Amino acid sequence: MNTVAAALGLRKAYRHKRVLRDVSFEAYAGEILGIVGENGCGKSTLLRIIVGVLAPDRGAVQVHVRLGYCDQEPQVFPDLTVAEHFAYFARAYGLAERDWTATREELLEHFGFAAHRAT
Image 1 (cartoon, rainbow, N blue to C red):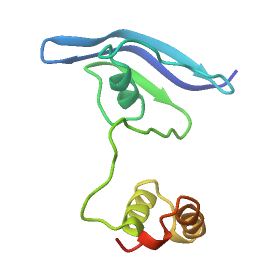
Image 2: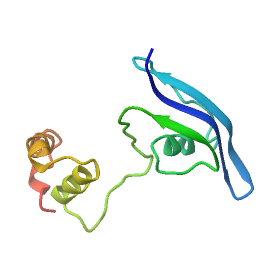
Image 3: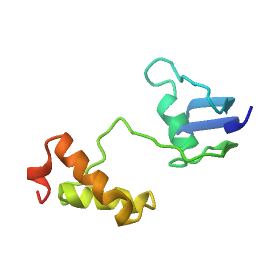
Image 4: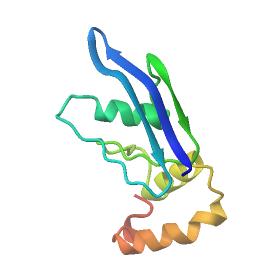
């Protein structure tokens, strides 16, 4: 099977609190991988490290596919309009405007945001 992501010996601490201790795994194409645990056990920290938002204190991550990540906190900016948010995230993901304009319009209609495009 093809490995799509792997972690080896990940460690992360915030000040003196260790949240990840030698976490290792391999994820394969077609496999569903669940990350479960109590609040505060390091699930979000692990995901942030896997997608490259956060650096581990020790260990390594290998990712061979494009990953998406949706944080627990909304990622919106109060000074941007709805349309500007689409443009911002499209640029962040390297999408050319011609590739996402039609999708943007479909999503705006589907979720009832078309009237708020400029707000």
